[in-house]
Length: 211
Image (cartoon, rainbow, N blue to C red):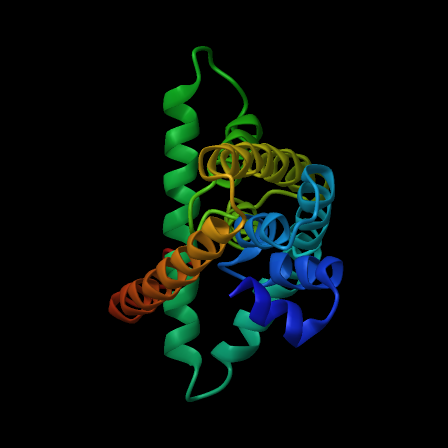
């Protein structure tokens, strides 16, 4: 997989930036690819972090307008409603987790920011910048309040994945193992994408009161 991407794009650093920007692959896949392509620790982490974090801006500003546009189109209105419901559920779940983790009473904005941070910082599929930014949007966080938890959360996730990649390399003493890890990540991402689509399709349409 690493060799295929290298041959396809022709530049390991550009390939890392591109892969890290792609939904589902994001930071995790970018770091694994970069280390498998023999980029050093800092290059892998830095490029993957930049590539994945850049997604915050278009998602934050374009997600709602795109959904609103799709709602006006006959063939996509129902699906757009279900996508909005899905992300609102994610946002509410993140907020509930944040509130449970708080020891003292804080402002609602604090818990929204904390929930967004926790969501992005956990380095699991479907918890990267793309989904985390959508969570921030549907928690009604302003740009200045959303940028910090997303950026720091992504940094923490990147640090965790980078350390795990180094541990794997230390145990295997070969870059080939990261190729299999990358295959596994892509396969898992594909499976989760199918599961998410099924969940979205099964969501009930948002009612007027919920809107």
